[in-house]
Image (cartoon, rainbow, N blue to C red; front, side, top):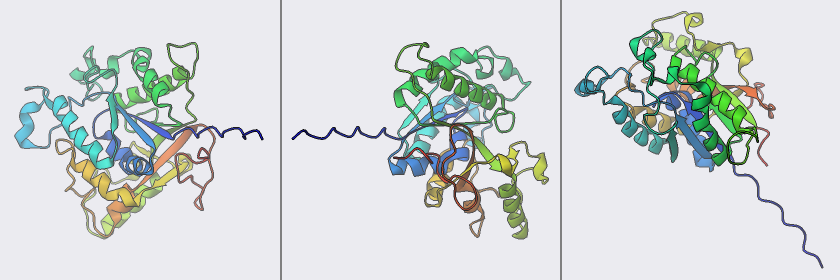
Length: 301
């Protein structure tokens, strides 16, 4: 009797996220990252800069500022190690190696004009450092920012451009070395207008201070129409991990302010459901709300 042919092993699930600075990944995707890491998905984070130009919220560390000792980037690397540990993620890399590209600061500022800033980098050259990672970890899913970088930060815009270009190049057998790999689904981070509106209304009802200067939702640049949102990843079990990961960035994030120190589960409802916009690939099965509830929807065996 001839043995039946062996069933080929399923391709391990792999998720790749491309972010601009340390802490961006937690704010946008921390609960999702923790959820997928706990499920056994290979989660890879590529961070494009060290965040050298960030504002320092810890007075005792003010000497690390860019206009003083310029040591914030190295310090934020240590913060990221603690953050990744909180999320259960053990594959974090810097694009081109630590310090290859410098934090560009805000548009129109002197750091933005520095030749070593990420904003000044050639997109194809920067993407050439990401392509080998794509071909190595073979992600079915890639997550990054939208074309305006969420709110217009030059490094976020550049991260978007580099991630999208790298996905294109990685799929081209004629480009570079290594086996070509086509990412099945690409998502951009999204904050639905209705979700933020509901959160603000609940905060007002409780007498909480709103976390932004603007009270008109439509004035916030990172808010998107609900119709553009395709996916809502619910990870309530990993809310605490996300908060712990945020607390790992004390130079950048104050988790005691109104946005995070919320009562009656307002913060949990906002922070543990992370929304996305599918821009490449086939939409998978949807739930009652008409949204995917899994970045790998339609890809699981």
